[in-house]
Structures are given as C-alpha cells and as structure tokens.
Length: 371
Ligand SMILES: *[C@@H]1O[C@H](CO)[C@@H](O)[C@H](O)[C@H]1NC(C)=O
Ligand SMILES: *[C@@H]1O[C@H](CO)[C@@H](O)[C@H](O)[C@H]1NC(C)=O
Image 1 (cartoon, rainbow, N blue to C red):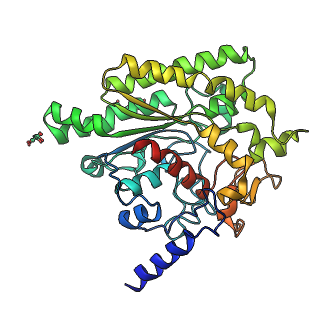
Image 2: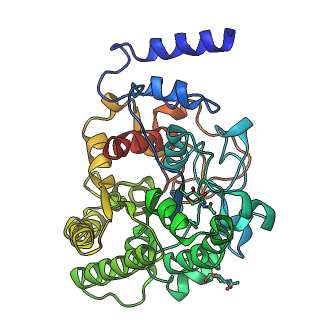
Image 3: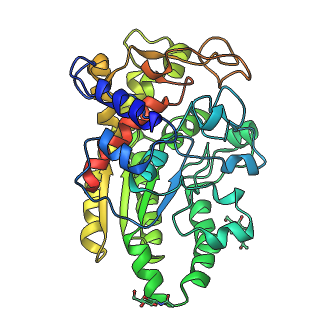
C-alpha cells in the first residue's frame, strides 16, 4: 500500500509540466505493473492486445542469445544491466530494459526470453513470445574480418531458421489445431530491428565497397525476402524499424573526429537505405493478404532528440555513460567500473548503444502506432 502510494506520488510528480515539458518521461520502476504503467503513460483507456511478442534483430534488442554463442560480442557483465532487475547483467546491451521489454510490459506480457537460453520444458510452456535477436547480427552474414573479431552471431536468416525449427515447432505441439496456431500467430506482434550492422560495422570491415545506392538496394531486397519468409510462417503484424543515424554515435564521433557534429558520410549511407523502406513495406502490405507493416522511423526519432535534447529529458547526447575498454569512447564498457550516475539523462549507455531512457522513448513513440 505504502509502495503504491509512493509510486502514485512519484508518477504524479513526474507528469507535472515543470518536468522538462515536451516528451520527457523517465523510465518507470523496473517491476511496475501493467496497470500502473498504462497510467504512467496516460493510456488507461486503451486496449493493447496481442498474445505474443516475437523479436528479431541485433544488439539493440538482444536479451541474451549471444551468451549461448561462441562470440566475443557479449554484454553479460556489469555495468551492463545496472538498472535491470537488481542490477543483473543479462546480455542486454544497455543499462536496463530495451524497447521490446517496455512493449511487453505495456501489453502485460513477460519480457521475451532469449530463445537459446530456454530449456526444452520452458520452450514448450512459453506462449507469450520469444527473442531471437543477436548482437552483431545483420541482414547479411558478417564479412570475414568481422567474424574474425567477434566470432559467430546469428544473422537475420539464422534467426528466422531458429524461429522455424524451434519456436514454431513447439508452438505446433501446443496448439494441435493448425487453425488455432494461425490465429494466434496472426495476432502476435513481430518486432524487427536489423540492418545497422550491415550499414555500420560490416561496411567498415568490407574489403571492397560497391556503390552505396546499390548496397542499399541489395540490403532492402534481403529484408523484403526475409519478411516474406516470416509471413509465410504465419506472421502478420510487423513493426519494422529503420536504422538510426549511426554517424552521430559516440563511437563514430570519437573515432573519426569529424568537423561537423556527426559523420555525415555514415548518415547519408543509412538514409539511402532508410528511404527505400516506406515503399518496400507498403508494397509488402498490399501484396500479402492480411498483413500489416508498421515502419518504426527510428532515424527520425533520433534526429528529433538531437534537435531538442532537453525537451526529451536528455542532457548528454554525445558521450558514452559507461567507461569503455579503450578509455576514449570507442569500445564496449569496461567490466566492473561504475558508469555515470545520471543515466536517465544520457542518450547512450556505451559508445554504440542507447540508454534505457532512449529505449523507453522508442517504445513510447511506436506504441502509439499500435493502438
Ligand atoms: C535450427 O536452425 C539453426 C539456425 O540456422 C541451426 O543452427 C540449427 O542447427 C537448427 N536446428 C535444427 C534442429 O535443425
Ligand atoms: C481451437 O480454438 C477454438 C476456438 O477458440 C477452441 O474452441 C478450441 O478448443 C481450440 N482447440 C484446441 C485444440 O486448442
């Protein structure tokens, strides 16, 4: 009771206009109930209804699959997870919950667990969604130099294979009637964030570059094929995120030291790809009966924050909150050193990855599209 009172007081304080105005709202307490969260978001009267959340993508949404892969691309050590359940590192590449965790909380679902971490028994019981994401994964397999650096991670294609040969296999047993499984899958939400490694890390590691517009065309073709595969497997409701302005990440700025605020070359490459998505998704929606493709314009969201950080509650948009292994803002967090205290006001937790606050803003922005 006291907790509930304290919480509602906390919530009413934060919803006062003096708190930054704009769209500033700090992440809610870790264990918040669905009811309190909907209140916190002023969404009490809306019905957000899907039975399961299936997740695919890269480090922005991996919840621990890489812990089970022979890769050095892991975030299963502190200070990652410092704002997660009792400060537990999980493999999430941020300080707390990710965008998909928040969407799950809003929908009253458990956080989608990493598929590779589930035992046979657990797999059979889970009807609320699974996470297939893998930090370092892309639309394409990584170029050899990248594989050499971080080992084996799951490409989007491998993630879909895993969905098919594990997740879907168990669901078939669970549902018995094919029609019931189809209905469940068609109501479920498929959340996808992929392509940032193809346009960032993989590009940097490529020995030879083709023209940017050809590369973007090629990537969007790969995306289209994979989305169709998911459709054929039963998916109908998709959120497909585009790629954020990679040239503004602390990593790019610290490494390349551009004269401009961001590395414009990186941002142009990302934009060339992003511009193909609205048309691609509209085409898929019109050609695949019963499908719904929502574009998550993450690039625009980042640009909005860069244009007016304080109105979103951010005080620092260019530095990593954690101390990184290279001590110059170009590597992952160094283990067991305390990160910045005011994490809520940092846009980035490490030099590549958004903070929990940014993940929460991301979730809030695109939740509106689901209503
Ligand atoms: C399922 O797919 C994954 C990813 O492609 C693969 O590594 C694994 O061997 C497959 N498992 C089975 C049982 O086919
Ligand atoms: C399939 O769905 C129908 C309608 O919701 C339900 O009555 C039936 O029990 C389901 N069948 C199985 C085997 O779950």
